[in-house]
Image 1 (cartoon, rainbow, N blue to C red):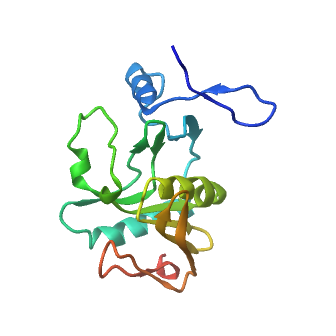
Image 2: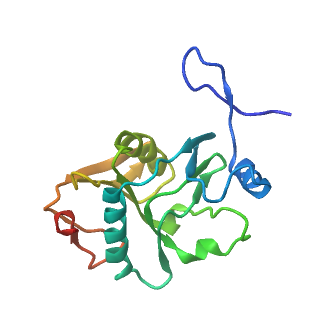
Image 3: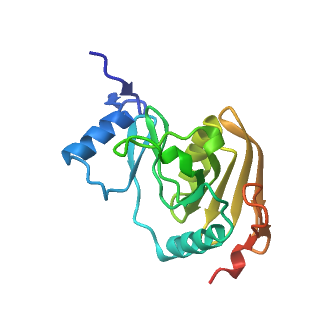
Length: 196
C-alpha cells in the first residue's frame, strides 16, 4: 500500500498526507467532529482559529449585502466546504456558488468546477499571510475567477482576478472608503467604512 507523505520543513520527518476521503471517513467514525473548524491543504489538516467580533461583523455584513442581489441558482455560501482536489478541502468565509453542485451524495463533499464558483471571500484578522499567500495560490491554481481577502480590522480588501497557474493577473488593493464591486453580481456595491 502506498501512503502519500508530506515533507513539511527541513530537518523534520515526513508526515502522512490525508485525502478528502480520509477526512470523510474520520468524520463518519467520530474521530473528527462535524463542528470542528479545519481545512485540508495539500494533504495537511490545518486548524482554524475561533472568529473574532471584527471577523463576524464583516462576514455578516457582506453576507447580507451579497444575499440581497444573488441571482436564482446561486447560493451565498457561508463557510461552505469545497473540495478543490483530492487533498484540498477549503472553507471560505463567503462564496458565491452554483446551487447545482449540491446534487451529489449527501455524505460527500461538493466538488465545484471553476464555472461553479463566482467569487470567494476570505476575511482576515489573524490569518492575513495564510489567506494572501497559501489560499490565494490554491484558489488561482483551481481557476477561481475572483478572490477577495478582506482585512476585518483595517477594512482593506485585496481583489484578485484573472487566475493563472499559481498566481493572478491582477491584484488590486481597495481602501475602506473605496467601493467594492464584482462582475459576479451586477449592481453590487459596498464600502467597508460604512459597515457598523
